[in-house]
Length: 277
Image: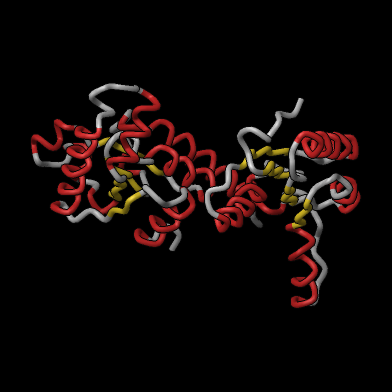
């Protein structure tokens, strides 16, 4: 059953795809960030690749429209025109990401598109998929300093205080770009020694730092360990100050994650370290 959006959400957004839905979600999220801090209920409907699944998606969207004050917004990357036509009949604002761009490209290139499902994952599909899976496994194994071995294989090693955004950024880099991203927390013991952890020193060219406003860090940590010294604003201010001082001293490139999306952070890292060059 759909949840009522009246109490907590301004709009419901559906990402509908015949694949994973990641492309629709990424594109939709990028557009929605242009409209401030709306409270949005997000629903991904992946693998809508049959008429039966199209009918089910239609029912779900219509049901949500029945309980919301406003009709849902739908971002679609459905390739099959018949399936697409079924879903667009829903009571929603339907944004057809394939239809909006394929026809102009066909006109410009002078050739017809293949209209094949799953092509959004790249021309060498299987190869890219394999690289992404390897990168995801690597990033999970090297999350939060779990493993020191094979850091030489990392494309980037993210450093920063706990809860500054290292893990989600690492996984985004792996999932979206096939980049092997390790991440390593900077802790008070490192600051007392005034030096980088020994495991990181030989990989310094691969390091990229994330910092965060102490007030925001305290909020995030209080969600996990409310009322703890770990989450106190005084401790957060001290850790952030010490971490930024270390990054400046070690000439590590860094940015603040406070007001940036994961996509923005990842794009900056890729550009600064030339990871896709």
